[in-house]
Length: 67
Image (cartoon, rainbow, N blue to C red; front, side, top):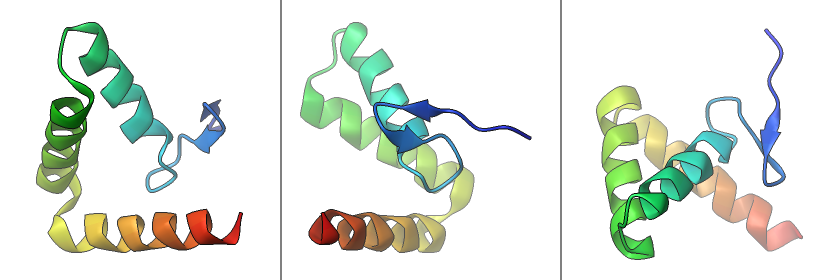
């Protein structure tokens, strides 16, 4: 399966692209940035579980520190 990218982030699960895309879609519906991110995180936790989301968040923070 081929995965693309969104705003430089991978669309693979854990890559951050799906999260960013959902946040942008929620922003277009009138949600604030903070609320859109909260809703996207809630959806992710429901779909993937808190443990997996925490692992991806930690990996994202680690990637952010490198560059």
